[in-house]
Image 1: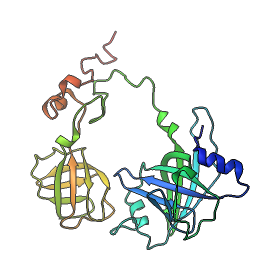
Image 2 (image 1 turned 135 degrees about the vertical axis):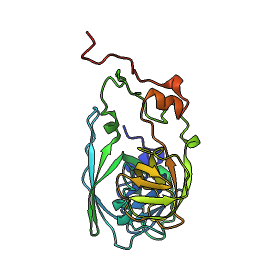
Image 3 (image 1 turned 180 degrees about the vertical axis):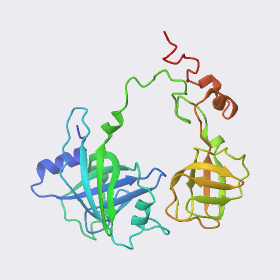
Image 4 (image 1 turned 90 degrees about the vertical axis):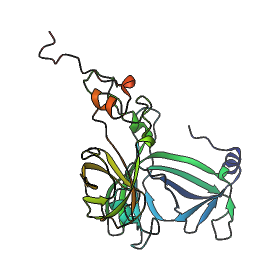
Length: 288
């Protein structure tokens, strides 16, 4: 059930005419927060500013069961519209920065028209309408097609969640694993390279980063993460190329991977007490 403030309830009950605008809050996986509105002017709600953006959406259908509801969006952006000072909106989408982003849709109600003289609007007049994960389906030219699946999508997991496998059933760095990823995160600076091979001054054992990850923290690839294929003599090769080749001076951080074996858990992460693999279970051919 949607929770409305008392002020909003009074407005909806007592006013015969009111004005509505959509507020969109998009949180990227790198922590960047974007705010847009369907109104044709900048709206300030409490201390947050919402920038006009041409977003069309279909009607929302929400049920009280466990089904996954979806909302479809069509976003039109100017070719020059920028996400930050280095990246345009379309470049950020092509680079994967919107992957698994979280979207909140609020409906803002007002007894007065939205004008440049509206001033600061109290957040009590906003109602959370939709919360879900953003999925970019198509993007080209100035048009972006996307869907937003409700958070019940996260319940689509296999059951039971814990199965008996030789590899560890935990994910590196999650609550059950307990490994502090910050202790293994290493900062680096690119000295050049291509979209698939990043040159740096990192001094690590060859192969140490295989299946790990690299995330850029500056430059045109800011916030984009790729899986590492291999590392050798300071050169990091990724599985999927970056959208842009790195420039000298671009910063990034790398994380090693866990192959979920008992040896890796003990030797690399010193975390054997939390290892939840079952390597000594007989294979099916001998378990009789």
